[in-house]
Amino acid sequence: MQDATSSTKLTRHLGLTGLAATGICSMIGASIYVVPFMIQRSVPGIGPYVIPAFLFAAIPALLAAFAYAMLSSAMPRAGGSYVFASRGLHPYLGFVASFSQWFGLSIVIGVIAYVIVPFFRDIALALDQPTLAEWLSTGWVRVSLALLMLWTFVLINIRGIKAYVKALIPLMLLMFGLGVVVIYTGFRFNHEDFRQAVPGLVQAESTRAFDWNTFLAAAAILFSSFIGFDAIAQAGGEAKQPEKLLPRAIGIAIFGVGLYYFAFSSAVYHAVPWQYVSAEAMTKDITATGLLQPIIPFALGVIITAGAAIALINDLPAMILSVSRLVFAWAGDGIFPQSLSKTHPGFHTPHRALILSGIIASIGILGSHFAGDFFLGIDIMVLAMLVNFLLMCITVLSIGKRNPEIAGRISIIRKRWQQQTLAWLGVLFLTGFIIVHVSKDLQAEVSHWYFRSTPVWLLVMTLGSLIFLFQYRSMTKRNIDTEALFKQLPEE
Image 1 (cartoon, rainbow, N blue to C red):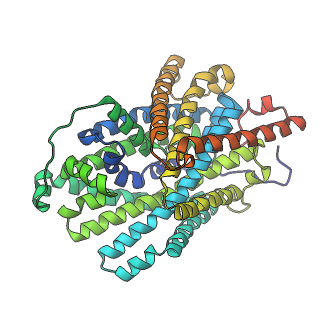
Image 2: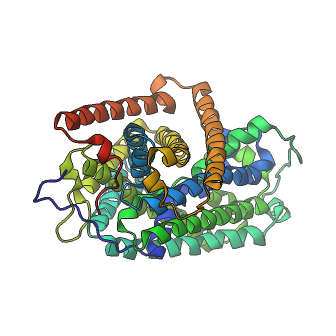
Image 3: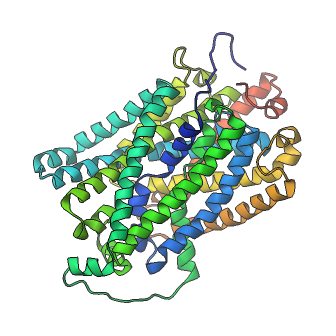
């Protein structure tokens, strides 16, 4: 598939710590500081049931993680989810699902870079630096800083896995350290402390009836907080002892992040009455930082705001690695231009795939700025990832017949009936979440159809389908045995 002069070799330098950090940092971001509280506006009526909904949302995430762990133990290659589905289900489904995933995640990378800057502005305001805060609020400054951060991490990724790990792990440790401040603060204070700190606070209602429709709608949104552990599988071509370490890293990421989410959200709701959170969410955008502000000292407020900024920054390097490996894998199979599968001669990283993904992420920055709204990109990403997770579960079901040789390499949960049981449960839960997500999107009041994530996602899928059909037909005309190609794993 490759010409004699091209270099397509990645190097296996990622250990368990680096792999786990890749998944953790892709999962923990602004969502933990915003989503568990703004959910009161997105799903009115959820009230005191946010934490149970969070726990329920973890079930399909855990089932998808089992599917990823099984498939990664058998197919440890760059481009994880694409390779899994193209070898274990069908090459078309593998490509179009991962294409929408790549597009959605690349746009969201730009969105994340764009929304980091206001946190810097808030820190400047807290430190009584209004001139600096005003400068950071200027349009061209915000866009320029967002682009600077994005391309800084693209360059770090290009410089190799060692540089990537050196940047990622300190950010992860700092993020957790600052997050612990929130958890400690939240459990240190209670609702009575909050009422004393906010004179005139009226508790409108003490209870709220449980409603399954409301609960499931909230769980579908909160599920988005668990998206990201698949980044570990995308890095399969650079993992040491991948058959063992990839599943372990996925397990560490999903369980570690799940516990962190539960502790963080529980701490904030322990200190702040849900009635107050609900009332505030209906009138303005709120964060964990703002909610805790009335009961914490000034210095802690600055630290917590910095923690939110670090959590956002931490998303960038891991997500950039993830999306670039999808492009690298497509190019290696000939679905994308093969020049994108070349690696840097000195750093052994897919530099061209990284640059292309950086360009798409830059469009996300510019789109967020000129459109004045970034939630559409997030909704597209959530739908794309739900479909992708669903296909991973279906791949576990189909791989035994589609590719029994590779199926025999699965080293996690070896008994076939156990694999199928977990996969069927994943199919059931994820299908339900997709139905809830799409229904909510189609029922939302918007000014134009293109502000709905579902039709935009379908357009992206259509574009991916056209690319695949054109390239697949081209491969057939060149007498490439596509059946044999997609039965085998990509070369290392």
